[in-house]
Length: 346
Image 1 (tube, rainbow, N blue to C red):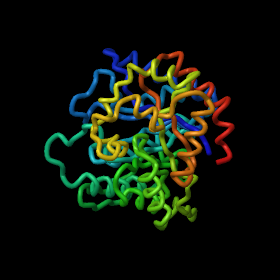
Image 2 (tube, rainbow, N blue to C red; image 1 turned 90 degrees about the vertical axis):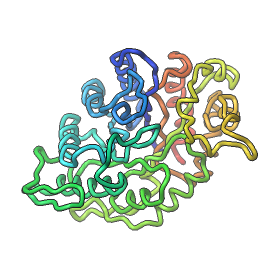
Image 3 (cartoon, rainbow, N blue to C red; image 1 turned 30 degrees about the vertical axis):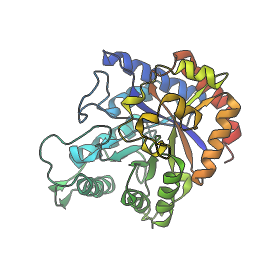
Image 4 (tube, helix red, strand yellow; image 1 turned 45 degrees about the vertical axis):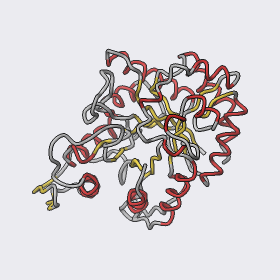
């Protein structure tokens, strides 16, 4: 198993620059500690009530973070494809691939989660628009000469991007997979990395991965074929290490769970219960939030990995001001020094 981070912004600063600086500090620490990759959430533009410090363009932060780090790879988590022209997405990704000299991963999705909704009438169903956009982007990355694209939503004559991607045949692509089997099947066909939500319990995650593994892959192109593999699957979890569960609960008392409890945590509702039963104590005690000392954290994550059936990369959720800064730094340092070695062979 490999290890990365998922910066799912929720800091509640009134000035965006403050949150961006804190994000960068975390990304630099992740690089120093040896985390392999970092996915950066995009929020703000299509969220019903955006906070003033939300990040609407991950690529801009990634470009700065790349200059301040040495080995960690970055990807937007995710670009909401229905809201952007495919040629713009393809060009932005190619430029980031060059700026980072191959440390960039594209990230695709619908961008309608977490309270997001279309503003005005869309040309078509967001899922259909995203699928057509992906076909357009992949073609733009692979054809150096101008080409025509005649789709349902986008029609272009003599389409071409400059520069072409730095990574050959193309950079890795992650795709947000949270609800439907069709997205898992699309990830398998296109050779994408499935990005699975950090708020979903093990049983539905296991079912989603089985759907992905059962689909046929088309590969990367240029003669390179990739079969769906558990190694490609990324799964997020919220992890917080302290001397004890009690200490973790005390330090996390400021965690704003209501900000994510818009149905995303429904899978944890106990039998006969309601959403009101899902509080911080319950999430920690049940292992949905992986908190406590090193041994407890390692045990919960190993059991989770087993229950899911295995996956290639664990992404630790960050970008939040939950707990205390010393506790967040402590978590990452102890995780990489003491927990990661226990899980690496899984």
